[in-house]
Image (cartoon, rainbow, N blue to C red; front, side, top):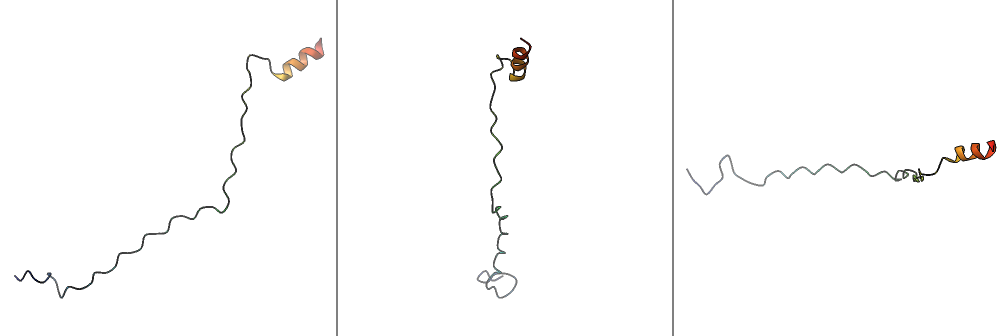
Length: 57
């Protein structure tokens, strides 16, 4: 067997690799952020309860 030539034919240039698939397109407009949440001091009664107490008094 002759080792100077690759097996299976005349040799030559390999077929080029296939290109990678394109990444998914980014949306043109970013989604809106979620609204901010404000924590309430739970040691105080809720405003509706205060209003009822003042109105009843």
